[in-house]
Image (cartoon, rainbow, N blue to C red; front, side, top):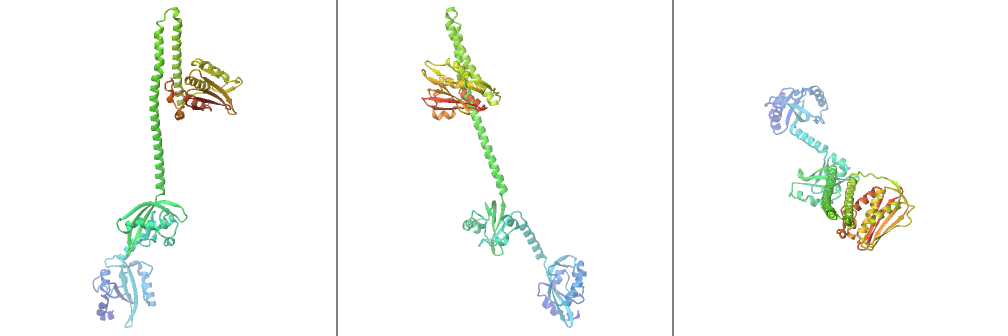
Length: 501
């Protein structure tokens, strides 16, 4: 220690010019010299460290191990960095510990061995390293993909673990790649053009959606958040990537549901509109179809009261027949309305029975003869006495009556209505052929719609529901009605009855 007292001025002159703390200890681990930086570092006044044990500056938990390290170092007598791979701490005068980096250098002076410790307070460096480690951990463990690439070469500099997992490339592979290599919708030129506003400072950040392509060739939709940054003097781009596969699927599913709901709403609105139109047609129909026969009934009833004499019986009968005819007509209309209601509610009960086809045709023709116009006739089918059906007899009679009555109604005087029968393995067909007004081609697709009446038939009485009812009943029973027609030349309707029910 006396040696250093003699040379203290030289030591101070040399050591005070150094920013690091310098402490010199003898072989007894006593501090024999310390520069101003060391005093300040440990919180001691000038000369206050001289003569105190080195352990004073070392955390108590390391005292025992430090003795062995010190002796081993003296024996080796080699210059080295102390605590390599370990965190070293010093203890200030107030007891606070702080991280230090120590370089040791043994030397001899006047036959005595000393160790010079060059110490640096690395508190700020440790704090920076911890922050850097913290941010790197966040970067690497982020569930989002993060890509860092050079703003000039566009080569990837760093890519976090999440991105490597999802894209399928490791960091070494990505180091030789650029963003265009994983974006199938871009090449280098188009990508450079896209990010030009960032590169030139016109925009601070950029967001867009695109596709990423994995190493295995599969693709997934992403949302890219891109901005320009720096590493020292090097300009870089930082891209935070959100895998939006689930969002896209949810959005597409939502859009599909919205489209479905929209279509359903449009269908509902169309159905409501159609219902409104049907109601209007129905009211118009009731007004017209009921008013005319009711007026005839009222007129005939009034005239009946005037024919009181016996010899006027013929006139009375004429008006009674008119009343009966009009009442039956109104009854048929009401039955049609009831049929529609039952079909809509699904309350129709069909009754299958075995019957002769000729029986049904005879009854229909008999009733229809009373409706024939002057000179009209119905041609009865031949060779049908042996044909029997297993079907709902009332439904067949309803359908056949409707078609024969229409043929009479829409045909002129002195014309013939043909009824023909044909048979296949699957169906018996009843064909009704007339030479009437026919159905306009543009309107034929509507002919089976409820309340529809062709434009050339509006002057004739009718509800426009008979064909609709007949077709729906037959379809419910496995049959059908089809037709062909030429305007002003006539119409051919075909009723098809299934044979193997």
